[in-house]
Structure formats: C-alpha cells, structure tokens
Length: 187
Figure 1 (cartoon, one colour):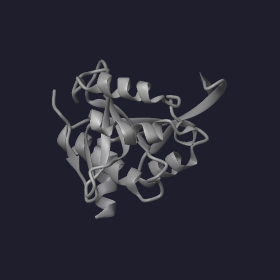
Figure 2: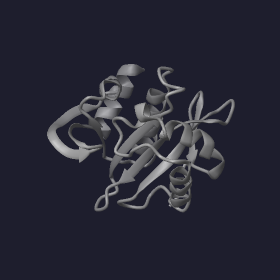
Figure 3: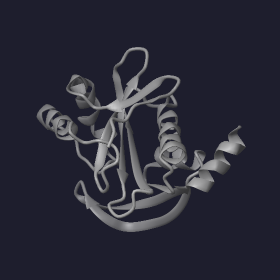
C-alpha cells in the first residue's frame, strides 16, 4: 500500500493532513457543497475526526474508501478532496468521487483532478474499470463525467434515502479501453 501523490499543471493530489482542517471544514460545512454528497455538513470536530480517521489509510487496500486532498500547487491550500475505493473482491475495479470547495468551483479543477485520477488508475495501476455514482439532480457532475468519456450505465430511481428524502442516482463507468480511446481522441 502506498502514499498517493499526483501532480497536475495546477494541483497536487496528496494525503489529507491536519493542517488542511480549516480549508476542509470551510467547504465541508457548506450545505451547497454537501447537497448532492453522501455526507452532510460537518462541524469542525467532525472534520477533524474525519481527517484523523483517514490518516492511516493508504491506496491499495481493497474495499476501503481513502480520501485525498486536492491542493493548489502554488499556494499549497486545500481546494477540495477526492476519494478512491478499490473493490473489496477485485482491485482491478475502482470507484471514485470528487468534492471541490464552493470557493474554487467553475475553474476546471474537477476535470483536471478527474483526468489525473483516471490516468493514475488506468495507466499506472492497470485498473480495468472505474465507476462513479452521482445524484441524478447534480447536473455539473453529470456534465463532467460525460465530457471525460464516462458512459451512463444505470439510473436508480429513489434508491437512496438521505437528508430526509428519497433520492435517485446515476451510475457512470469507464473501461480501460474506453479511456485509451478517449485519450487518443484528445491527442
């Protein structure tokens, strides 16, 4: 198992550390950011406990979500976080998620992170398939997934009860060969 570190042109994807707490809490406590997420707003104490609970996790453990910091390369400040989970039964299958701070949205960061994670999983780790499940009302995430070559696989109607109501979700996926095709089309 390894400590994940990925650099893009503007960002660094790295392990979450306690010095990220203030920035992490700023967006994780915002109801607009958590609206479509599987988590709710966090208190400062909950945010600290989350970072501490994630501290011992490393990429590569089957069945475990690991959260990573997305930091601005120039300032070092946290602008969001992302998560990767390898399937409990087959580590060639992965699920991902991305959260960008409300202060940093609409700057192309989510796409930059998504492409970097896909490159890491498909090109370096030889993962066969990556999925992401999104709230059916989350148009920004749906558009992001479509723009990067993800394929809609399922629409689950009122399949999850969270934040006091039934919600519907989409499942998007990409295979390694689809990633390769997408890269070739972009070249």
